[in-house]
Length: 139
Image 1 (tube, rainbow, N blue to C red):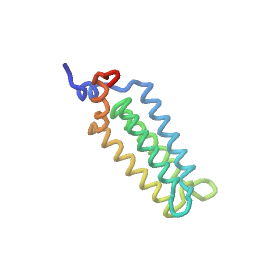
Image 2: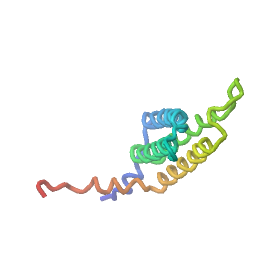
Image 3: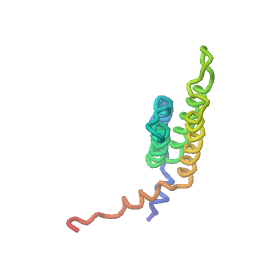
């Protein structure tokens, strides 16, 4: 009998899962670029929403496709972020050089790194241990 951790480590992400992870990473980055400037009062909820969504999606990718899916999602997010950091023909940038812009850029790097490290260390395998237990009806 193998443990649930050994089964979770042995799974490999198929090409469709990796492709979906890449697409989700690019879409998340574009969505983050759209909402990161939204502020209500003292709370920059756009940055919080963007970074929280990336972290949750990285965890979901790690649970579904393992470390490879989380890495693919992070790389595609980072690639789109790097492409948008270059200047546009008009001479301006998509991410402003202010506190909100820097918090989005640096926060993205921190969240992507933390999500990949958690996926690589197997922090998502706690949920797979509870799935193997039989459920009791009526109790």
